[in-house]
Image (tube, rainbow, N blue to C red):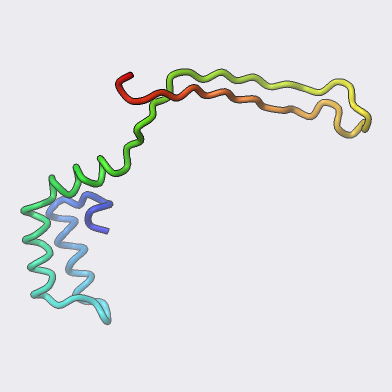
Amino acid sequence: SIASADMDLNQLEAFLTAQTKKQGGITSDQAAVIAKFWKSHRTQIHESLISQSCWDNVLKNVNWRVDLKSQLRHIDQINTPVAIVEMELGKNGQ
């Protein structure tokens, strides 16, 4: 929760205080260790999460259109819109 929210020191303190007060939560000593660790390694953790969530492919081009059917065997299918989307992907940096 701390890492995914990229909590600042005030948010961290409020979160850890809530965790120590909840039944089955953490102790105040554990909260102090977590706070110290987060203060020391916040940047590295955040950068690691970002690098893990980035895709290798990038979107190069998008084409789309909406078609309406004007002639079919069954009358209830006429004027039914159909969306067609074409996406071209490429490797990052290429």
